Length: 349
Image (tube, rainbow, N blue to C red):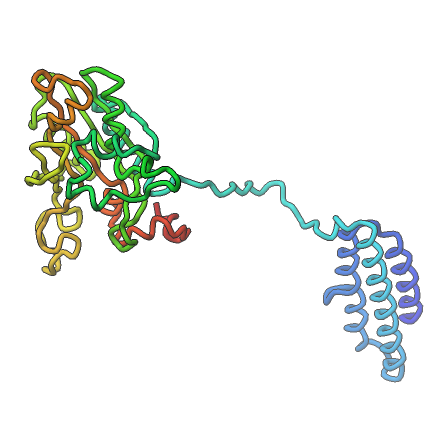
């Protein structure tokens, strides 16, 4: 009886497998007959019910039938793979499962801060002005009260374009945009000039030969240093938090007089110079202050270059490195991380 059932099973399975037209159906066939829970396995498990003298014969028959069915399965699989190659890639798809959202990119951390800076000053009434990254020495130096023999020019008088006879160079700041804007417009005006700048700095943890800068300019009658302090104090509080304090220290820039460096209370130790553990703050080195930008009142000589009446108009200017602001805002200790394109770093922001 068992022998006839096995022979019948062989005939039915061989006929069935020859009629299968998809790889998915063929794999269901394999599971039904050849898997550990399949029909062939069940016959093997039922050998214990066979007469002991018949077991070797039935066992050999089961193995022969399993081999024949397996060979028929493999042959049909090869045939389907040749005729329906795309079906080999088909996998089960549950239409009730929620879809997978594609990964979305986001702005680089420097540009996140770049746009935030611009947004703050736009809300303060400043317009955005742009200018060329390739400049002439006149706009990059002379019109900003930096003649060819000025000592401060040595650090920036580089990156001239080949075959231009020193008539064009990569701008070292966005200050030329201020000059071009003042030549084009009459006071009153309030602008910020964002963009890339280039300086001959060796790449290190705090310096890089290309970085982003935002400079600002306000010109009108009766503009005073108090206006400058008010605007920058609002900016610092908007950028770093309402509790941020600002400090102005005397400095020198050829295009402003008087000039000042602007510091903020340390964003790590909150101006205390020490951490809660009692250790000296490594960011401000115990000073409690961090330098973030330079500023000052526009020098009368600059107004003469753009033909503004320096007796009628006054103005202030300021400039900041966006990477510097980003490093302070996010607690980053190496500017080179911004350019190395490591996703583990960039995806934090």
